[in-house]
Amino acid sequence: MDYFLNYAPTTAIAKITIPVMAINGSHDMQVLPTSNLTVIKGLLKSKNEKNFFKEYPELNHLFQHCKLNNALDYYKIEETCSPEVLSDIANWINSL
Image (cartoon, rainbow, N blue to C red; front, side, top):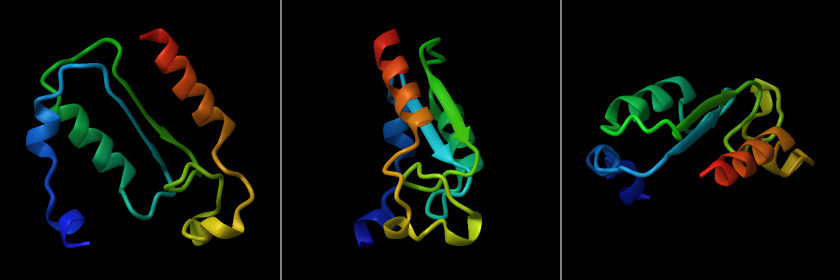
């Protein structure tokens, strides 16, 4: 746990030159979506046209549809992963 609390990926992100897909759910209670995506975009020196950034409305950290008040109840949500997210991942990979 200490590793994750102390790790700052900014240097590593700034060195990335390959296409990046960075996605978050708007109800993610572990990674703040707007600031996370904004920081990643800003750190990438390569403004690759294949980069993909998206915040999905009403999805939690595991990309499950949820209400904000139950965003951490992963085990109570039957959906494994939003079909929209899976489709975007497949389409992004196929576009490379």
